[in-house]
Amino acid sequence: MKTWFITGASRGFGRTWTVAALKRGDRVAATARRPETLQELTETYGDRLLPIALDVTDRAAVFAAVDRAAHAFDGLDVVVNNAGYGLFGMIEETTEEQARAQIDTNLFGPLWVTQAALPIMRTQGRGHLVQVSSIGGIAAFPTLGVYNASKWALEGMSEALSQEVGPFGVKVTIVEPGPYGTDWAGVSAAHTDPIAAYEPIRQARRAGATARAPRDPSVTADVLLSLVDLPEPPLRLFLGSYPYPVAERVYQQRLATWQQWRELAESA
Image (cartoon, one colour):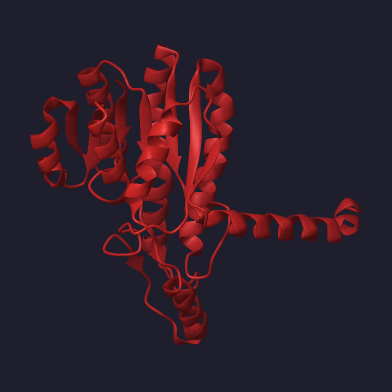
């Protein structure tokens, strides 16, 4: 039996993975801004589910929630930093409030949860931090610039983290999903006020997104269960087949550009 701490558990990946863990007999501390959305699961799984009201941007509340979960379940095996949302809009359109809110949730939220969980995991000599990034964490797309920034930052932080906590027996995996039918682009999303000059770019992006049929997030459940059971999990794991050609194209372009301008770079 594993003990989990999952943020953003009310819908999407968080809900899917909470249910999967509970179904196989694990215990889950599941956080949500509105914990009443977890009432059905509480009725089904009883005290193996600990619902906790949490806004991950509140550092003090995060530490209290993690401490409560660790005391209730006598430790933590898996922490999933899943809470986050998409901010859709051009860089020029993004307000300061929107940018700060995006970074607060998608970067500082996982940072606070990670800081709260690490003393527990270091003391145990084991644990697995699963940081939910995106294919947008390694490749940038128009209309998602600040979202990309939040996930690129999460990736850099998590890669460094893996090197810092590995000696203590704590594992880190950055999960990078492709498009799935979560609420990320739906009711959970935020949008900028559009500037008309960008409309052709927006329409092209919208057409490309329409051509992709997002998969049901439930198909990822067994993958996550397998991941957290691995004795030596990978630092990075794509979800689905969509990210592979995107990543291959992006890295080929980057390597080609670096090589093309190597002479100029090395003259510095």
